[in-house]
Image 1 (tube, rainbow, N blue to C red):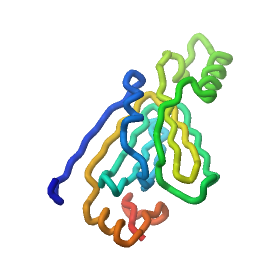
Image 2: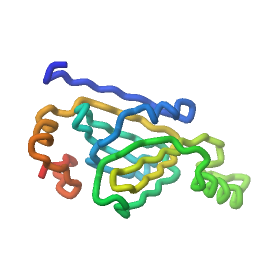
Image 3: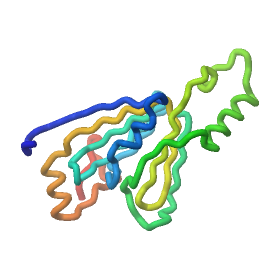
Image 4: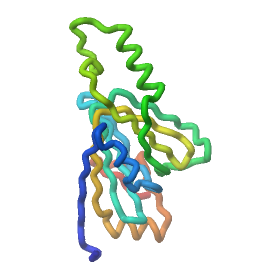
Length: 172
């Protein structure tokens, strides 16, 4: 691949092809952003992996649950260690139990239609875990700008979350 080559890919994951999520390479991808859009019920996670030079954008769609620890059990870190699929977690069981207990004939709860949800776990290199329960995941990948990747490797600079300008994360 030439230095100036630019490539993009996009994959959609649903309950039916959920096991394919675990085959996606995300190990050591550094978080560059996390957003939650309440109106769309969408969580967006952005992370860069400097070894395959890929920028990852994960769009968790129709989110019904999100839980995250931030205890730094293994020390500081902001990289994803692994991603996996959970099945029938305590969290989804608790949601369904709460729904069943309060169910009404004209219920508008998002659990009423019987949708099968993805239960996606993310382990961070700090030892913290995030669990997102959603209807679907759109995973976009694109080539990381070679200049950014090279600069990161040479200088050991870290991307920071607190210095955003026009929705761009700056290098510090």
